[in-house]
Structure formats: C-alpha cells, structure tokens
Length: 66
Image (cartoon, rainbow, N blue to C red; front, side):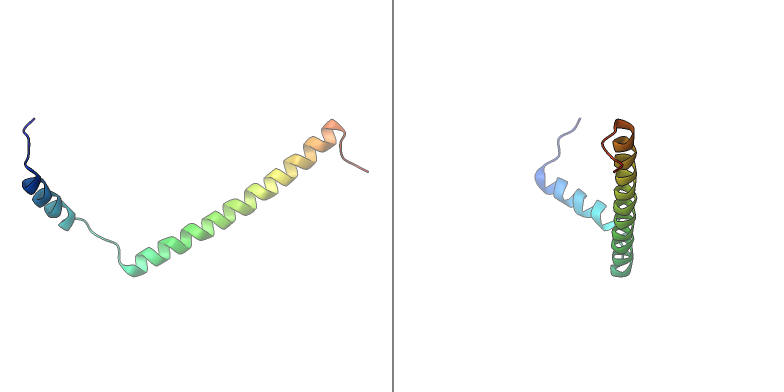
C-alpha cells in the first residue's frame, strides 16, 4: 500500500468532497420534519403498547382489577 503525503491526501479529500451531492435546505428541513413525525408516532405506539401490556400483566398476576 503506497503512502500518501498529507498535502496530496488533503487534495484527494477535497476532490472527493466536491463530488458529493449535498441536500438543499428544503430537503434537509423536510427530512428533519419527517424524522420528528416518525419519532412522535413511535413514542405514541410504544406508550400505548407498554400501557396495554402493563395492564394485561397486572391482570394475569392479580395486581389489578378493583
């Protein structure tokens, strides 16, 4: 494996970075909003699943039901 001097390495990195297709501001905002929406859906789902399972386990083990 050939060694590259630091200056050549930096030039290669800059060359490769210029080939990257960076997202636009609009794409970044839309993606961020979609991530937050999915997090809220996941949060609600897991809260409801945890509540339901907790209720079922408490009934089976005899802790619940007044």
